[in-house]
Length: 413
Image (cartoon, rainbow, N blue to C red; front, side, top):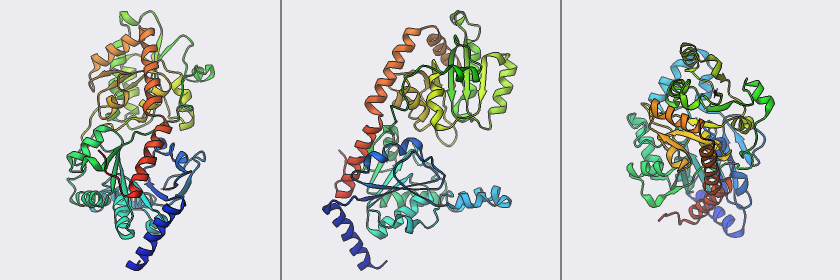
């Protein structure tokens, strides 16, 4: 594109803004689309034309424009002989495999690009295009570890290039804002906008008897629920050890209770072996993940939801969506103070240090034996979600950010 063509296109963008045509937001997520991040987009369509660029198949419930492409990583995954080798090659040479095919064609016409994370190849593509087309770039950030991946010189250069090209950043928690500031991003370029939730779809309801029967839960059982990937850093093993400490305790003898684990991952075999070693097969259910649309019914089974994340070598929990979903369903919660968990939960959960098995066990005992406290925490959780994390709140904040970036007044105070 020549300088003259760029100037004509930029003038066209400004004409759209001033004449009332909806500005186009190129919402670039590639292989990293997040269900909760998509909820507010239909609420913006009256003012903005939001177009999602993604790589995975999405359910049809999302009522906004979508365009699907492929990324380098997904292409390499399809070649069995290089499936293992490509990760080492791409991570070392490019930083990651999120390079999107036909990127410029997909985002051409956008007045703003909103891309996820600084360190990805698709972010580099977005920054390069934004500079070329002379349009604003917003970088939405979930990573809360300062200088993340900067041991790779290639990734370090990508992050710096993207940061310099960005007009504004959207941090998903205050902790992430502080991480960006530690990397040198000025505070006045950062919006803190939490992910919103469909608080009608996720709301307090009675559990379904048929679903209880499917998981072999008796009507009188109190249910402790874990939902998530079965990975070391998610802490399911810590929850299992803490639950074993609860079994047989004097505090919980009066009422039957079960632990329901919904998830899959490389720790699944180890968890099953521990259940057997602990002799608690009759008290623990480990079941496969369910479709996203079924998740509210899973939370309705629970009396207590536990989010036991812990830090790991590469980082820590960012903002667990399970936490917000369970809070919206009015559930009492036990969480570990890891990453953004404590910030999201506020006073609506019992908090423990990561991997502190006695503390987690004590919190479980307290809630299993105290119905009034469970109700109190559940009500606080629901009220907090409605006030700070409803999808309409997120849509309002995104609307403000997009308006200010388009008008060139994106500085925050």
